[in-house]
Length: 216
Image 1 (cartoon, rainbow, N blue to C red):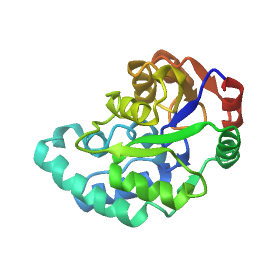
Image 2 (cartoon, rainbow, N blue to C red; image 1 turned 90 degrees about the horizontal axis):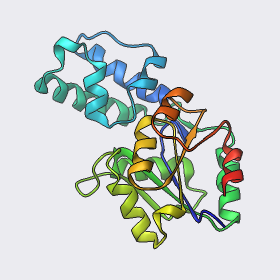
Image 3 (cartoon, one colour; image 1 turned 180 degrees about the horizontal axis):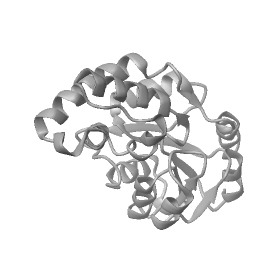
Image 4 (cartoon, one colour; image 1 turned 135 degrees about the vertical axis):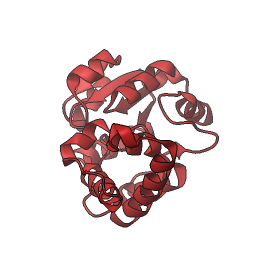
């Protein structure tokens, strides 16, 4: 077997979280009198952590540290209330996870969400499956595209990086995979475009979750 493990991104890959992220961010912007954005705009704003999301959502002239900090606090509060309203696994993801576990493939999650919240979301929506490692951003795991989190997961599982498929939906994910020397797989059902994934170094693109099995 060429690959022994799959490392998944979370938002835009396993779970469609876009509407809840957009709703909470727009509520936070409105709280301070800033204009909201269409939900589709958030496809290009999410994925690089809370501070980056808030910074990009704010008008350029209001991206000072103090404003980012207070809006980020509001966003965390809003998302804490809204995160499970509309979020669901993408169609075909449950069947893919079933098939991977049946084949004995180790599956893990690496997200740019805070670590404790990443665990909460995985437990809420993906508790049926046994993930070897679930990890988000913390003091020991900087946000992607830093490869530290991916490297830590490979080391914990005792599986060489070269035996991992890294599956994600953004340039950040493809860059992380490349930096960690994992096989970068871009998903076309997520938040970003085919062109972005290719430009960022995707070694394979898949149109539906079941297509990943062809790479195992």
